[in-house]
Length: 369
Image (tube, helix red, strand yellow):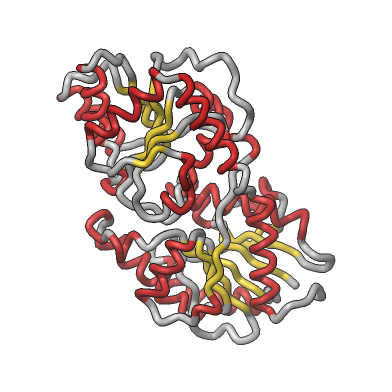
């Protein structure tokens, strides 16, 4: 059995976001557990496959309009190369000309439908094509029960074909918390990791930091994960509010830098208005960092009672939660312990094992190629 997994998101801005993390980690964890005779290939324009230790399968199509081009280009490629299963971690599945090829799609969230105001018209259209294409999938992977329910509520898909496979936490980000803290950023600091699009609600944290500082808590904000115009916009807003010295936006971090940041932060803050899963707060928990998050989307499901959950517009509540973690060592230790226990439930090895089960179900079961 030859399986083709789409790696093209690793050659776009998505490489540094959750879908990029998902794609890299699931491939790395799948490789050692594939049955004998099964082979994994990676579809790409360039060559991220080699770094992941799998066969490279070149894609000759455009970088824009992927959903439309794939309808024409993917069916003959899959037939020509003899693939028996195609797994798309993000892009819409081709819906015609794929007799004999099983299709698996991963759906990470329904933001385009639940919060369309947070995305551009082009991105809304692309994501909705992906959701509609789920109707033609042999199996659909939803990364949370919340995402599964939202998908089934909005699209006519056989519920038996939609399977929940939660994400995991990379061991590289889950090292024990050390005594030292990164000297590169002012202390104490609260950490945010992720995108800076409106649904992430990061500008809200500026008001929280300002309130903390007015109350005598000299906390700083480190907002990592995105570069470009939105990063500059966040820094501009900080200057306008007199917080220029209190806010740092280092852009994208390596895994080593990210692990260091998680371990050095006084708290991890995640005020998102919507999440289909919520990897960064889970990673922070694994690294021994207490978490304050909103309960939006799947966050309550994923984080459970291990995080302090505060509504995403409650500035006073967020400031109080941060102040409590900085001032109450017993509370802090309890949150760290609860977070570590919660994060330990999520591993990429288990995600890969359950993904392999999905592949087997899609092709009808069995280990033979």
